[in-house]
Length: 259
Image: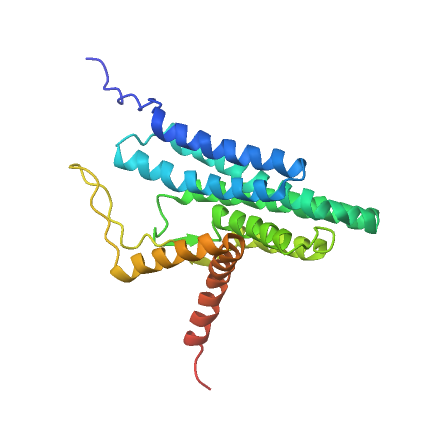
């Protein structure tokens, strides 16, 4: 009798979710080209467009039952382009490049800060892929790469909109690039806002319920976004970035024994 063989793994490649992932990667690629041409507002908007596609490709795959291992790996590679390379190069072309005017060493610090950010994004994505099955889905370990990219892009967009040049903000750009990179590879927990989402069942995906006040917040955010997009996005990105260290400090204070 022949030995039992394991069933072959599903190697199907589904069009719709991977097409959305490709659109997100194209937006990140366009952001790089736009930044190299000095069109920084277009570059920043493209980073946010990439984040929009990144938020819906996985959701579409789950809702349509077209998730695959190929899609998971392809999504990570696309994220490295859109949320690793694109923000780093947008920041480099806008401000970090200007450090060369301060001397050879500051110029090296500029491109090193951009590379540090990109390398930390790659490490963050690799760690996420290896821990996705064992971590608590209510939390991200380290700042997720789309949120970090949103902070970088909204900073460039807001400062440009306020007529600050990249050369004027070059040292702030170095600090922000380094901080964003280190937050991505840190062990600080960030809320993922997935605590109320239930897993899919054999009968299909379960409904996802949100409280009424959450819908009011979304409506208020959309109204504010139409009034002043760069500053609203920067405020949201900064608030989320500091929420992780803030929760960590609060928990440490609560656990500190009274003297």
